[in-house]
Length: 434
Ligand SMILES: Cc1cc2nc3c(=O)[nH]c(=O)nc-3n(C[C@H](O)[C@H](O)[C@H](O)COP(=O)(O)OP(=O)(O)OC[C@H]3O[C@@H](n4cnc5c(N)ncnc54)[C@H](O)[C@@H]3O)c2cc1C
Image: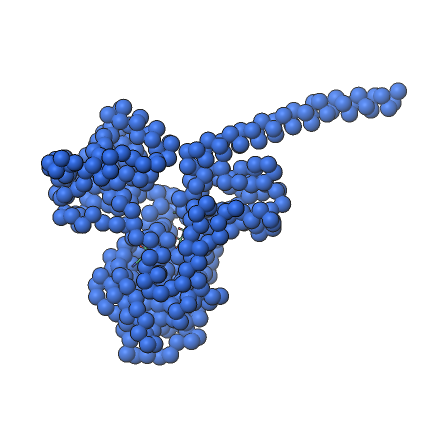
């Protein structure tokens, strides 16, 4: 009797607890699979920038990484984590921290294509003696890594540098993101002269984060300054902090000065920048991976109303805006701007039609066109940019003058790998996804 009773209780428990639990888990798995399929079609699994790379051989399928990601970038498929929403990744690496077997690294490049990464040794020195690769340029993301690479590279330079008063500076640092700033601080700490060249403004990629974005990082020991005790900070406060460091330690940061070429000449480097020539004993490349936006090279392009990136669509309302380009970034910016109250957006694209856009972008563009907020002029290019208008040239060679407050150019960019090849830095292709 007792056995029958126990059996009944067992069956009851199975039906009340285990079966519903199993049904919910199955439903969740089905949902994740469906979302994965949908996002693959929409191009959302292909991350634009930093994203987790999962080593399936070491993965034990515990799902810790999936739970740790607040952006739902990862999901469990067939008992293993997979990127289901790659485009949402903002690279804070909480997944990597949560992985108990260290099976996640943060990488770049489309997982299916891989990416060219420069060779460098344990001191971040490339195949060219005296030339170092630090931060994101070396294929490793995150602010904490960028800080640490800059410091370690300069420590190695300081240990091996020969005093040479003939050169303009001991270290030429290219890029004023976290890697370049930490390299500059480290140079000061080791009493070495340094110049930091920055084509844009102080801050690197952080400068281009959306307004008030919460930056997640780990506390780090900075030369001269000491422990930078932050784990969460707004983009704006982090940039203020960088500016404070530059002021306090009098780093020689030359903003708006792009380095065009670098050549090794005996035991020194010749650096050619927009501002002129300079010689250095060592070079630290802290250029990140965003590249340099391609320009249109038309009259008026230097007006302050011309941008090459969209920081924050919400800051633009009630304006006539021209977006130049037909790729996904141009469409995403145009749609984002068209959604703001009162904006009239025109896209100028040199081809007859858009080619291989993400499904989501095709849908959004149609929606905005229907609402009369956005129009597209195919087979056109910009002839001239004026203070309150833009002159376009259309397929029939006729000129069209349109009212304009702002121009956003998305004409692609020059990738750092081209620059590296010209200098003679050896590259390897990052492993491809199987
Ligand atoms: C949207 C987004 C969100 C992110 N969120 C986080 C986060 O929360 N936490 C985190 O840890 N990481 C985050 N990351 C990653 C982090 O921003 C980068 O890993 C980090 O900024 C890399 O630093 P870096 O100094 O190597 O390069 P960058 O910050 O990219 O700086 C490189 C600098 O070099 C300059 N440069 C390039 N070429 C030249 C040239 N020829 N001449 C002169 N200057 C040049 C560029 O203009 C740029 O300013 C995020 C990234 C993105 C895109």
